[in-house]
Image (cartoon, helix red, strand yellow):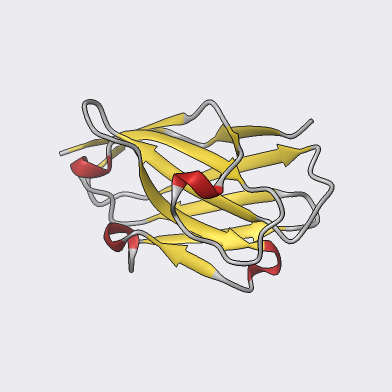
Length: 125
């Protein structure tokens, strides 16, 4: 059974940085995509970034380009999201997700089968 657990959220001042982590267990297949999504209060969930096994392919939401960097450690099935120059509008619950076997990664929710419970990121102005 695949399980996904996020960590690393917290509160930070605008302009600061945070690094989120996501540990996936029970993953016995590849290649696959791991991705970050976020949902702010009153808004729909949106894709932040995604990366394929071996980091052969990445995808980012438009707002994440240049400020956020996704990476993964395939040996431990751990996903990371480095977030720099954070803004108040980045405040949201951040979710990690993993797909079933997949070659091409996107930030579309429908591409992902297993989800974590989320970790809260709050950016103060």
